[in-house]
Length: 213
Image (cartoon, rainbow, N blue to C red):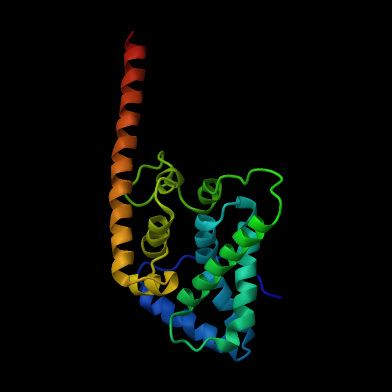
């Protein structure tokens, strides 16, 4: 039985390329029927898959099911994985399709109620801030202001650590387009961060005035 548990944090000295090479090697070994390699492959990428799905999925309660579905699809398709791209990129492309399929299924059935905001999933799956961001400013609120394409490009490259080339392959667009989307996303996030900080400073100033009075 496969246990989908997050892996321990990698040491700071471990490079992304080395990690990806190891994960790809585990995927290839898992394809050959090595049960330990299957566990390593799943454990190494479970966190990334869940985080990515949380950013794309509209239903926070469906995140775990979609992550599970992603790995079931991947394990069922391992015999076709040949290592031409990294196993991380390959798996995230499967996660993307799983989310897309869930959207199609949801659109085909009657809606009984509004779907909870996707940002709730992000709040549970991500830290409240990126490096340099104040913890009091919710990351989900900032990302939620981005167009979907820019948000996806930013999450893939800046939060999950994919190269621009891998992100381009996953999303099916040119590398230059990914770079442009990330650049625009970063500019928007910085602008929103500055605005949010300004609002908070005004709030603090108002509190100081009330206290002084």
